[in-house]
Length: 155
Image (cartoon, rainbow, N blue to C red; front, side):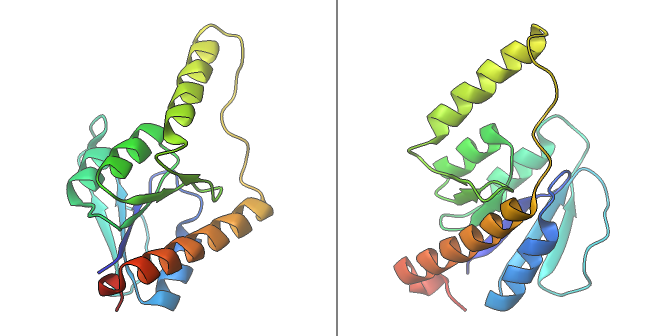
């Protein structure tokens, strides 16, 4: 069955994921380094992993199956999940695919170098209303595409 995994520690769209999952009756696992409040629903699970470097990423990669969905802004995690056959969406609604992950990794590495050299500062821009709307639309489209292509994954 289709499952949604969320890299939850800093994810700004957890509520949106739960809304869409409820509509499609999908299970959601929020994976984090520390406890957080989650809706009290049988289809929502919180998995708290040890507080180690990449512990959340490793847990998600170990449990994700082909055709599951992962929500993350972490580009290396997105790359690892794509290799497992999962679909990956960033919190702004941008899908990570085999066609764009290389460019995303290269851009991430370049920006990291520029920040390290003091050339640029700051992190990602705050999530805007249009980003949330794009995320909802993209998540809905990905679920429908998976269900059309793999009906065995439907409820």
